[in-house]
Amino acid sequence: MHGACTLACCPECGYTTVDIGRSRSAGLLAKLFSSRKPETIVAATLDVAALGEDVAIAGFAENMTTGHRELLRAYGIEPGRMVRVGQHSPVTVVRVDETEIALEADLARLIFIGAAP
Image (cartoon, rainbow, N blue to C red; front, side):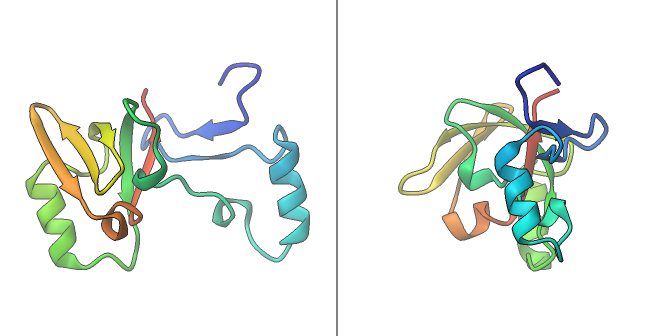
C-alpha cells in the first residue's frame, strides 16, 4: 500500500478493507459502530467498482444461491480471477478473458472484489 492509500488488501485472496488506522472517516464510523468489527463496515462489491478497472474476485456473499455460484463459476467468475468492469447501467458488464458477461445489480452486489495484484 502506498503512502496516501487508506485500504488494506490481502495479497493471497485480494480481500480489501479500509485500514482504520489510516482513514479518518472509517475511524469515526468505527467509533459510532463500536459493537461491530471494522471489516463489516466497509466491503467492496462488484457493483461499485470503477469503470475500466481490473479487479480480483475475492468471494461471494453467504446469501448467494448455490445456482448463482455455479453459474458464475461456469463463466469464469470465481475467487482469484481478474475481471474488467465495463459498465454499470442498466446492468453491470464484466469481461473475463475474452468473454463479456452482464450481471443484474442484485447479483453484482453479492460478489466481493479486491484490488488487482
